[in-house]
Image (cartoon, rainbow, N blue to C red; front, top):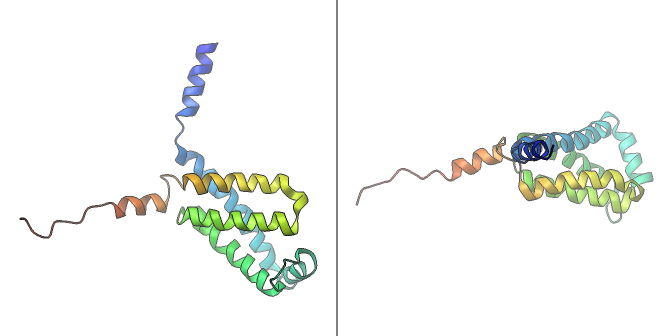
Length: 149
């Protein structure tokens, strides 16, 4: 029994991070993409929400709504592609903190799940199945020598 548990643990430990990062990237991207689609489906309702319910300090509702939708449209695409994953995760982590602190503090169980996914992506990146990885490999390629000495 103990040997079986050890083999199982070894198999789980051997799962590559890239395989784990893919569902994290897609899951959190879906959350924010769907939020953007809801706002864009009825912009007047979105503006009303920012004006009446969200009420962010120091930012007019129209500007806050535009910023939110811009973030919710761009960062999910970046996460799905695995492009600029860490900056995208940082931006969404800031947005999550803003939502938690100023808008829905009682929704912390949901926000802590978002934050956990985003923190993993921020700290570990997108993994090997990403444009970030491809660009990093490409940028490390040595240029051809220009002349022999």
